[in-house]
Image (cartoon, rainbow, N blue to C red):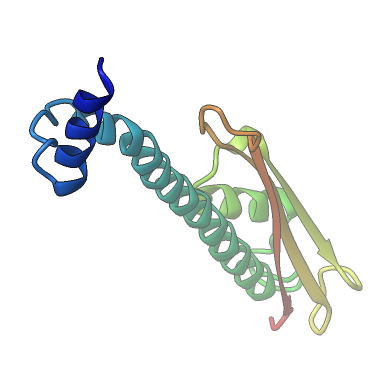
Length: 147
């Protein structure tokens, strides 16, 4: 290309008249933005699922602690650890094999003692190309045995 043609082409480009052939620009921009957009969408979905699992574990702990505080060893239907674990599993949204359920009484299952129900869960996250593969969380509830 001769220098005069190069200068003429540069002037057309700088004035805006030389930008007529942009047929692939939109496709390139789309190819660059779609992965970032999809990562953002799937990240929000995964975060929502983990948060829902945590909230269900919190509710399960509260429900089981309430069940335990109303069914002491002196009530007509006393609660054992297996009963409380069943209450937790009925309310738990996380897979049952990834949760560890703990029940502890401060001074036996008697009126006036406290009961603590805890759930520790490992939630598997399926985000491709991410270093985050599991989320671990623990929640607990504590109540005083009433009757």
